[in-house]
Length: 149
Image (tube, rainbow, N blue to C red; front, top):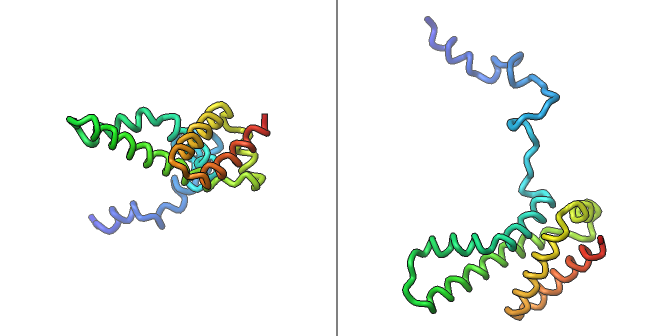
């Protein structure tokens, strides 16, 4: 028995006529296209999902820090969680270009209700933080989304 022949069966070069070269014209969970993290749809969905799921995010943050006795400490943790959440969401919004035709197409196809709500919540947060440049950027995108309906 030759051990090289046995392990040679698993070599990719010996698989030339095998499974790797088959083409399938049906979809199953293994060959469905996945959403690329550098795709505009990913940016749009991550933006609104982060904002609208902020309650679950806050609960995760509280679980991370455990039991806090002081209500002042809880407020600080909650505030830091909000800052982290909105900063992360804003970074996704920065990648959305309302001047680009492909991005416009994606924005038209997205859930308008959720998208508008997320933008309004973000603008309100940044107004409270007095970060008006971020407000202006988000407002420009929100105005474009409103113009779609």
